[in-house]
Image (cartoon, rainbow, N blue to C red; front, side):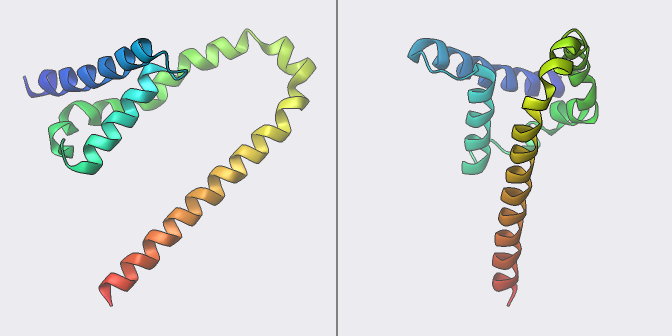
Length: 119
């Protein structure tokens, strides 16, 4: 029963994000806005992590299975990647570097602030 209630809460947040996107004509997927809403609610302490853990942990454990349909779809686009794949190389490398540098910077900021708090 706990997993059903937690899954329902996640669904409500997803539905809220989808509704907001449709109502306000926001050029963003409803699921992405739902995740942002969930992040804000968790950050503000409105929703506690333990309220969702029973439903979320099995999903996170099997997260890689959710990417299988995407990989199968990409196989159908093989010819396009062979012909134009070189055009994707630079944006992929640059976006990966930006993500790595941003993540490293954030981790470094948090580790410095944790060290200062401990001292």
